[in-house]
Length: 309
Image 1 (cartoon, helix red, strand yellow):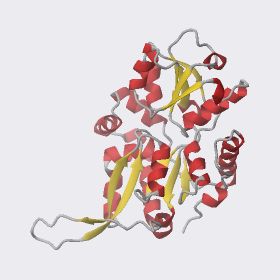
Image 2: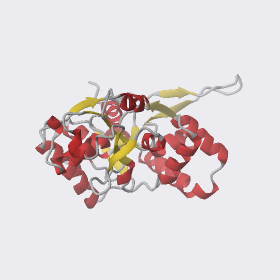
Image 3: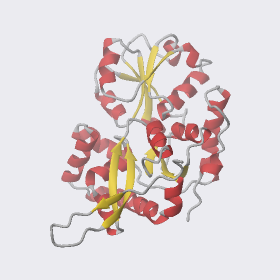
């Protein structure tokens, strides 16, 4: 019935000498930002999972909602996303658990403009604003508009996945503003034609959440802990990071070396289990979307939090 996704098997190479061996596959969803992208670039998580008899299978996504949709379809087991996509997934009944979170990064999300006539959020009225729907930029934009007495109905939303091509659209006037997050935000900061209209400071918390398919979390808690162990190890090695590591991460993120390095140094690499305070934060976001008429039903965040093995 599609409720239990079949476990894929990886056939290890034999080189003609040893017997074929079945290895479980851990399917990881990542975006070109954050901790999982760094682990994917370095290959350290692949090695750790291999030592536990698992093969890491990576799949790239444009946005958090896509990751949660894939988890709901049983296509991936573990991923990372922002604070808005998760509340929509809870409300829509996606079978996933929040398994961890990273410290807040409010200045890592912002509204970028090029038009010099746009000086405040009020000037976005009637303008074309591009952002990824149900992303952290979506929630930030909703919050910023609400504080000025505006709503989504006062702008012309352009729902589009994040891409550096939008900087050209911004400069050319095809769009008037762009809601975006790091590391693409750093690229926009370095662009002479673009400027930050407003960032998330004093508006949103902006957290990164680790999410897992429910059956995977229940059946393989040791794999989740192994992932978190490798994330913490990468953070601990910050001072000793090698140039080759930075180049690998820059290639994976498709970014300039200096931009990738700045992004990497901003990351905390400190996954923690959700507590009551974080659950309340997420519930407030869910309730805000519900009151704006964008959620189909109230999302009970506490019911989607993994309590461990």
